Image (spheres, rainbow, N blue to C red):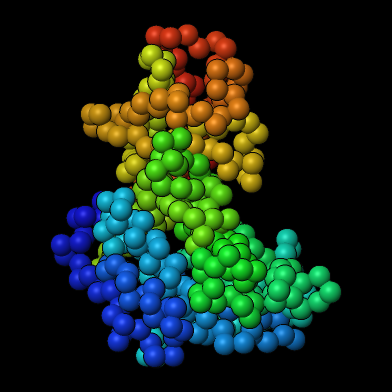
Length: 394
C-alpha cells in the first residue's frame, strides 16, 4: 500500500497560506503553518480528547493552543513521510469552521486525582467509552490521543507540569496540557522553550506509539545526517535539534488507519490470516550481516537489532532497518556492523533481532530471536529458529 499509488487519485490539501491560517492563531503559528506541505485527506481522523476530572477545568486558551500544536505535529509527520517516499501522508484531524482542531471535551465521573499517572488511564478510557456511546459517530477511528491538564499541587504546576498519564497504550496515547504549552515557545532556549521540547516532543513521541510505532533507534550514518529518531530519544530534541522518523516507522504509518487516504475502505485491524515465516537466516559477509526472511501474508518486513534486556522502555536502542523483496516472498537486508557502532554487544555476547511483519490492514506481528556474536564466524549462514513465539501487535 505505497502512498504514491494514492497521490495521483487523492486531492491534496494545500498548505495554509498566511491568509488562510485562522486569524486568532498566534503570530508564530501563522508563520510556521503558512510554510508547510500539502497533505493527503484521510478517511479516518485521529480522535483528540481533552479530558477533565469532575473537579478541574481546562488550562487557559486551550482550544487555540492545542489546535496550533496539533496542526504543527500533523505537518511534522507529513514532512517526514514525504521525505521517506509517502508524499503528504499524515494522520487526519477534524477541523471546526473557525480553523481549530475538533477537541472532544470529556468530563470524567471522578476527581482529577483519580486519573493520575500510572493507574488513571483505565478509568479515563472507560469514561471516554461512555462518551462515545452517548454520542454516536463522534469517535471516528480506533486511534485516540487523550490530553489532560497538569495537576496543580505542591509537586506539579504550570512551570513544572505532570501528574497525569503520559504514555502510549495500544492505539490510545496520553499527553498533558499546561498554560505555557504554546507553539510560540518552540525552539527557544528559555524555560518555556525547553518545557515545550519536552512535552510537545513527548506528545509527538507518545502519539507515535498510539499510531502503532515501537521504539527505534537509527543506524550510525543516518543519525549523523538526520539527527535523533522521534521514536528513540526524539522527545528530548523535538523543536530544538533535528528530529526525524525512520523508514521503519514510515512503513508502519503507511498501514495505519488514521493515515489511510480518503476513499480507502480497508478494514483496518480486522482478523485475517497471520504471516507465516517459512525460513529465516543471516550470514556474516565481510563487515556486514545479511538477513534473509521468506514469509507470506505481509506488506512489509522490518527489523530491529538490539542489546538485552528487551523489555518495553529498555528498547530505545533498537536500531531499525528495512528488508526489501529480493524475489517475491523473500526479503533481505544487509546491515553493516559499523552502523551498530553504538551497540554495547557488537562483537561479543548476545544480540537480539526482532523481525516485524506488517500487513496491509495494519495488523503487526513481532518475532524475537537472538544470536551469540562469539559463535558467529565470517561466511557462516546461521538459520534462525522459526517463530514459535511470534505475537501480534507491538
